Structures are given as C-alpha cells and as structure tokens.
Length: 211
Ligand SMILES: N[C@@H](CCC(=O)N[C@@H](CS)C(=O)NCC(=O)O)C(=O)O
Image (cartoon, helix red, strand yellow):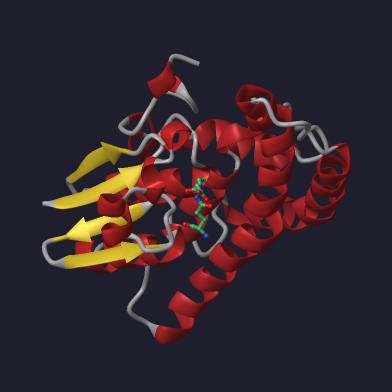
C-alpha cells in the first residue's frame, strides 16, 4: 500500500491526492502536523529529507516533491492521466510546469499573506500579495484560452495538468482571490470540484479542518 504524507491546507499535497483518486489508486493518507514542525522530525526527514509535504512511501521507496510524486502515481496506475508517448508526456509536463511556476506560486503568495500569516501570527507582506495578484493576472489569459478550447489544459481528457491546476487554485476562496477576469477558468474549477476524483478527496479546501 502506498502512503501519502500530506497536510490538508497544503495545495502541493492535494495535487498527488487528486492524482491518486483520479487514477483509482488506493493510498493511505497520513496527515503531518506542520504547526508542530512534524515535517522536520527525524522520522519524517527519513521519508523526505527536504522536510516538506507531500511525500510518498511505497514499500522501500520514498519520494518528495509533488510533481514527481504525481508522475510516479500516474505511471504506477498505468491509466491515461499521463502518457507513455514522449511528446505527449512533454506537453502535459509543460502545463504542469506552467501551473507550478506561474499559477501556484502566485496563489501561494496571496494565500500565505492573507490566510496563513494571520493564522500563525506572522505580519502579512502586502508587497508579496500585490506581486502575486499582478503575476496571476498576467497568466490567467493563458488558462482562459486553453480551457475554452476543449475543457482540458491538454488534449480532450483529464490529465496531470488539470489536476495540478485544480490543486493550485484550492485556496482560492480563503485567500479571496478575484477570478472575475477569468470566467472560463472559474466555471471550469466549479465543474472539476464536482467530479468524483475531487469529492473522494474532500468536499472543499479545508474541510478536513472544519473550515
Ligand atoms: N516544491 C514542493 C513544495 C512543498 C512545500 O512547500 N510544502 C509546504 C506546505 S505547502 C511545507 O511542507 N512547508 C513546511 C516547511 O517548509 O517547513 C512540492 O511541490 O512538493
């Protein structure tokens, strides 16, 4: 049985959880308490020396980094959320990387300062929020075009790219992210959050903590 170490408010953690769910892979979920630095404990560092969630253990094999874990799960399942074709896999990777570097990081800037920082008693950094809003705004049009085409970031089926994007936007509401300039993406997210692979993980972001 594969074990996935996660934190319910960690959107990188939610990406492989969505992948496992969409791929029909049964995984054991093991929550790590970031509030007490459990991710830096000796036992967890043996699983992931980076001291971060998510992490995966499959028998004697351990892995960190959400994108690597997601690909491992997709390849293990053998389903069609990834591809064995080198070029098609590269096109899916391209979107996964775009989401990580241009969407998730900016959602994280806004989320950290508006939602996490007040929760943990850290002074919010408004300049970081402003940067996140500006860079997200610059990149949303790419999503609008891609999702308007056929409802998926790549091709005509659900892939890692879509699952990465849904995970990236998970803190959308708690971080009060304004997506009014992206109606296609907004409608798409609503549809994705009604799919079984999503509701089998949770009903909404933070549900595990009663948010
Ligand atoms: N690049 C990593 C980022 C993982 C990450 O930053 N995880 C955060 C939670 S969202 C974490 O574990 N933070 C605790 C720490 O850095 O001590 C990935 O995609 O897996």
